[in-house]
Length: 339
Length: 251
Image (cartoon, rainbow over all chains, first blue to last red; front, side, top):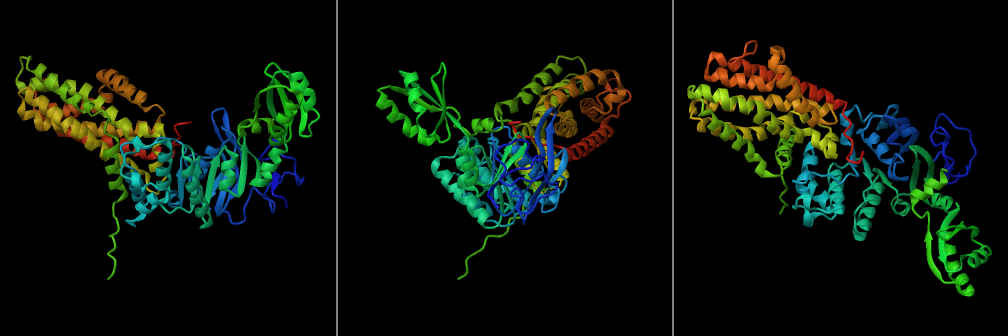
């Protein structure tokens, strides 16, 4: 079984990746389907969510189990909606979402097991970090007096614990929310873009923390639209595009599959025509087109092209003015892939 | 030597919610808290211009102004902070995503809101009565304001749990339902916190039969009606909370 599989049509209409295992769209999870796990705590069954005319999730089927699972997708892919559906904040219009076999929308007791770190920056600004964590602890009936302190320590917030949240940076607010989630000792932890605003040191710290929580046997679901972030966080990745599951599997294989796609690089130079002719001889170049903005070079390996283009220009005595990937962001890459 | 262990914390969810409400829902600009006081004092002074007896004059001028203007606006500000503002910003998720029953959330928020409103309104109406020279009306004015606020806040909680723009709907309730329809229809007025609060003041202080509106309970009966309105508001809010989609601010 390979790491990456194209999601069947019923849950991923977009032809993101070449199907590794050609198979008809199954009605039920097939053994080895990377969209599903054997020891699932969270099960999403043909879930659709729409807001008026806008479809946020469309017939999505997947499951989550112990360990860290990354949710990857461009903005508007449906990641946050899926996470809210898992926590019960949003009800599904059709299909179902269960946590430990129970509906988080109807069964309040399930919330003892779930914690969400929402993407929103909004926090009750008049509270301190300690106040927020203790409030959440009280709502969950946490009787351990040291739980709040431990949760704050886990995200390295103790030095600022008694400061008001209104004075916190975005990254600090995120960490305070993570602490509020951890204080309940959740079995299912849902993190919506948790690294937003965090500085590099805190990113490393939080990534280590999330991985450790996953290793402890908790179900950790982390969303991001940054592939490199998800790579470091999660071994298993689900890719959402337009509210559908586009791919699922090991992140390395997903990265390879993405890298195999042609990418576009803008090259601006003094003599673009001569440079274009020379670049066509470079192995990694698939095609070159001359535009008003400059040369648009299509390549399968953008990294190799970046190394190759400078010597070619030097040899021709052409001055390079700019070399810039046109579709380096994951979002633009997704756009290309689903075109 | 054994290490001393900290005793387990025993704060109940209801107490936690009340405490949270008291911390979070007080308007940030504290100067705003004095506006009701200033307004009540102003209307208390205006009551002195009346030729009526002080108790009657206060009920007629100060009381009417308090119950048609100061009471609903104060409750609107506090009531929106209780639920609507948190839902809009996404902060309500911290409370909603807990195993606490919906009724506990609603009642906790309501009690917290009542305490805030009482802390703002009670000194204001008391000062208004004193300035008007109607010291005997102080207790009745406080009862009327606090019970009126309790009913208003319950209704505004229900509106906050039902509509996406609770401030607009709450204003519409006060201006169109209470003031416009309530002025003409006794059936509407007898379910309206503003009208009922005024009848509490008029009835308890015996300010005069002329000031009593027909078809509406007076005095302590009006207090009972306000409690009933509050209970209905809380029941609706609890019911609506089950269906709530506490969306994020980015939605």
